[in-house]
Length: 263
Image (cartoon, rainbow, N blue to C red; front, side):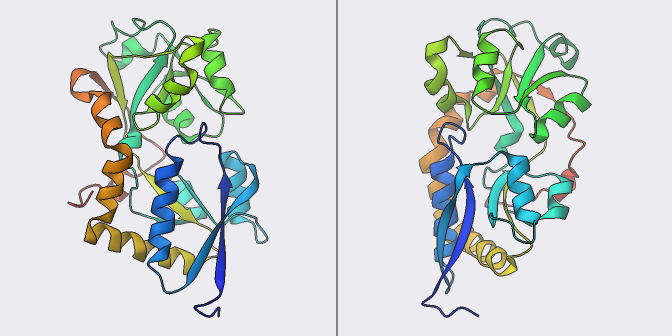
């Protein structure tokens, strides 16, 4: 056992702010939650950036280099790792807007059948690939995040679905190559963004769970959520869009704790 004075290192996958536009919010949430435990934790990024598949491998390996990560949940991931079932996105990662080259491209889309005429782009190891394909949507994939924006610009696919919490910051980064946020539709499927902890670190999982619960109770969670994400949510203007509902075959929707008043 470590004494209260000794720091326990908690390693997470390094990501650029481009690859994770909500990184500042998530890191603040992670550090504040762990700070509420009696044990002192020191957050350490991995030496190099990691794709999701590699991070999960490192989390499940007996000698892996990663202890905690954040990603959208699936039934499979919840079996492999220790899920902290507090949706740090309040389920909003399931609301997807589209980056496009032609801002009027999707203006005539009123149904899922209409959307099937177009192709989407995604990262090869993102759960969204399976969700979109299970709904009979065409998906092109890339092995890295940044090239997807240039593939969209080059016409390799028609639209790039992104979380409503990510898309504005991404547009700000890639606006110069001629991208736009579609203002006509929103895709929706049940999901949530969780922290996941390696099975090697059950003590970290317990501390993180308890810390986040305390933050929900004392209002600190809501304060950070609004501070970092409130304006982004307003700019998405969901009420003005045609909502295309998708099934999520990768997750039992009843496992999502989205009916909690605090969320």
